[in-house]
Length: 401
Image 1 (tube, rainbow, N blue to C red):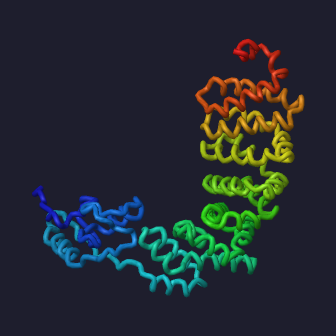
Image 2: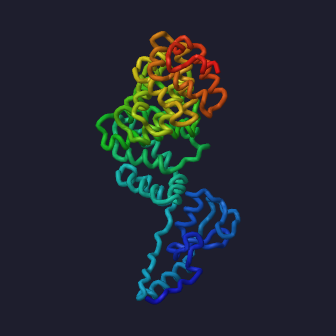
Image 3: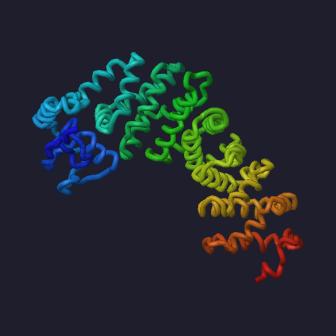
C-alpha cells in the first residue's frame, strides 16, 4: 500500500493526529479542539503546550474553518487510499441554546438533554454553569419537596449538579439563597419506592457532601436535625452505592465535629452503623472515615456506651491497628484510650485483653510510629498493667525494658 504523507500543519501538536475540529488559541497556535480542551480543563494546565505562553482556561478558542476545509478537501482527494473524510463539527454549545432548554423544564427529555450535554465535555459544563443551570436544578429539587412529589427529571437534576462544578466561592451564597435544599435532600433520602432509588439517593448524598465541603459549613451543620441523622443511618444501611456510602461518611464526619450534633448522632444509631460498615472490611479511605467518626463520638459518654454495646466494636478497632494507615492507627489508639480511661470497667478491660487490644498496643511501641502515639499506648498499658501483667503473653521484664 502506498504510504500517505500528511501535511504537517494538519497534525495536532498534542495528539499528533489529523485535526477533526481545528481551533486557534490566543497564542496563535492551532490545535484539535478535543485535545486542547482536555489539556486546559481536565489536566488543569494554564500554558500553551507549544509556545509555553500563558493560556487561561477561559480564553477563547477560535474555530479555524479554513484549515478544516483544507483537511476535508485533502481527505476527499485521498479517499481511494483509505482516508475517511472528517465530518463538519457541530457548533459549540452556547448560553442562548441552554436558556432555551431551561424554558422547557416541564418536559423530562429536557433534563435528559442537559445531562447528556454535561457529560459530553468540559466546554459544555462551563456553558451550563454560565447559563445558570445549577441554580435551576436546585429550584426544581426544592419545588419537588414543596409539592411532596417525586417528579420525572429529579435523578437527572441531581446528576447534573455532580457534573457541573460550581465554584467554591459561589456555594455559600447559593445555599443561603435556597436554604430549603437541605430539607429537600433529606426528604429525597427518606423516600421509598422511587424509580432508580439507589442512584437518586447516592446523587443526593454526594450533593450533601458538596454543600458541606464547599458551602458555609457552620451554617449547614447548625441546621441539622435528629431526623437528618436517622435518615443517613437508614440510607447507609439499605440503599446507596459505594461512592454514596463514602460521601455519607464524609458528611457524618463533618457533622461529628460539633458537640451539638454528636448527641443526635449517637441517639440516631450512627455508632452502631459505622461499626457494622467497618466489620465489612471496607477499603482504606472508608476505614479512615469510620475510625475518625468513632473517635469524635467516643468523646462523649453516650457515644462510648453505644460503642461498647456493640460486641464487635473493640475487636474491629483493635484489628485495624498497624494494618491500614498511620491515620487509622492514630484514631484507633485514641478510641481505645478513651474507652479504657473513662469506661474501663473490669468487663471492658478483660474484653480488651481477650481481643488483643493490649497486645496491639505493645506492637505500637515497637513499630515505626510517631512518639506521641507510642506515649499514648504506653499510658494505657501503664494505667491498666494489673489487667495484662499476669498474662504469659506479656512478660513484665520485657515491658519494663
